[in-house]
Image 1 (cartoon, rainbow, N blue to C red):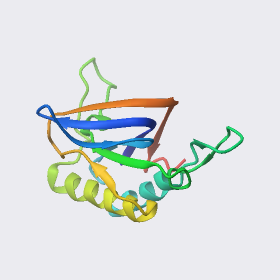
Image 2 (image 1 turned 135 degrees about the horizontal axis):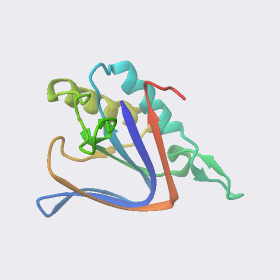
Image 3 (image 1 turned 60 degrees about the vertical axis):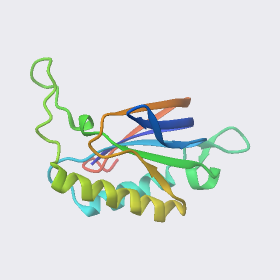
Length: 150
């Protein structure tokens, strides 16, 4: 599984012109699920995302997690995070997990992240054509991949 985590001042997701989820200060997390990913990957990423210290403390140092900062979380599925661009100019999505694997893992990740953060994780609509808007604060953008475990 691969995450793109962005520290935001605000973020929202719309489907067919209607806003379905929105947050203020917090994390906007794009979630890509690959073939071979497991619940263990989801658990590791949920823990990492909840504890990632990318919010400023009183001294202006990034030393606080979303939990410490009292931030909100929005998680949106995005299969294009699995893209391979090794060959040619058209990305290949062969590594993207199908719905039967991706939906349960995305839902499990959101549930585990909610438990880790002690707060509701707002979501997009899996597989929908979504419009995502955000104001990236910083900008701060972190990529975390459960296969690299950096």
